Image 1 (cartoon, rainbow, N blue to C red):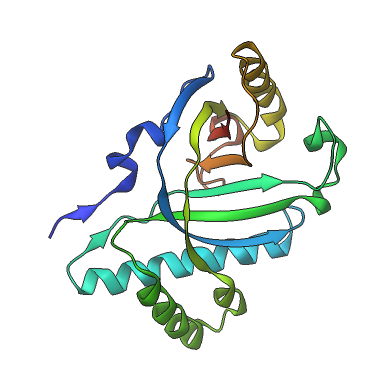
Image 2 (cartoon, rainbow, N blue to C red):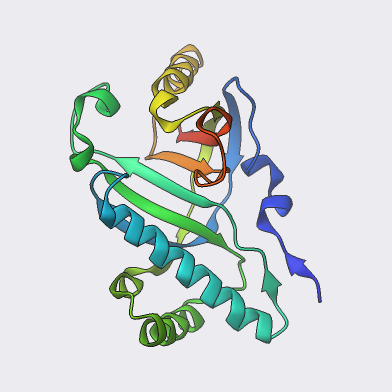
Length: 201
């Protein structure tokens, strides 16, 4: 039985260089959960656990029907309710809003997801499973760059992206997007790789 691997099928979306570049991101299906607060806090950790539990539960259901797939990388979009030009530094982490995402194959449908999540909740008793949803995300034209190093050093890479956007005469057109290629539990901070993406127009 063949296994769908979206990271390989959409290689351009899951690789990036150290210098910003323009790419086009077509619409895709994602399971997601939204929240607010410090990414080092318990709500973020519990939301991540719920999303991965959902992803592997959905994978197992489809695998039984002969449509197996590799669970994709964790992703997240971030935003703040502020007019600040530098929200990462000026807005407290407790005020950050986020939506965590894991991409699903196009054949994954809402009815199966809802049924699977109900069964997973009864088995795992994770309340946040009830907040996981399946939705589409279409970002279109984006600027994308690879950040290597700890999350705390992202502002320098974000500045490279901001300079590129200005040089190209572009403007932001959506939420800041991150794709977490490394597992922080297994990777030294200096070797962490995170794709930073910004929809533009």
